[in-house]
Length: 165
Image 1 (cartoon, helix red, strand yellow):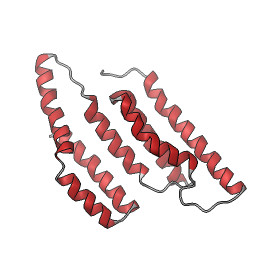
Image 2: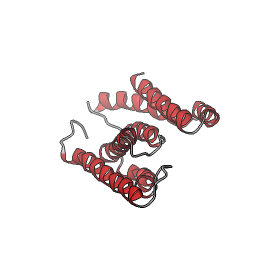
Image 3: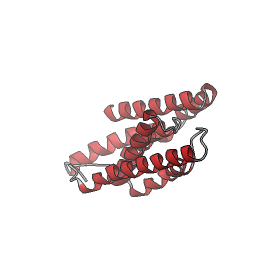
């Protein structure tokens, strides 16, 4: 039940980000797709039953795919917010990059491929901000700096010893 609760929180945050960033109609379509999609709920509850079986057999269990599903949903919920050079936009980049990195390092390394569109958007677009000349260069330099710092922070998870895995 606890893992189902975590999954519900992650899905609700993702839904809210879509409603706020795209529009309510797209949010409604997403809501109905998520309700009738067996994959997400099955993955969160399936992990729970598998954990119980493994605890009985080995005393320890960790399924990286469900953890990666949680981190990817949360990272995507930050990714959907506009990329601006404001403190909110910078915070968005840190949070999304950190969650993608943690999901890839602690969970499945292949999930890092899901972050490629986010990284390309962060580094090579202005995110709807109108800027020309030196202002555009300043925005892009700040974005590169933010992304490199966020990647360094995420990479620090590979150096820290983990209590599991």
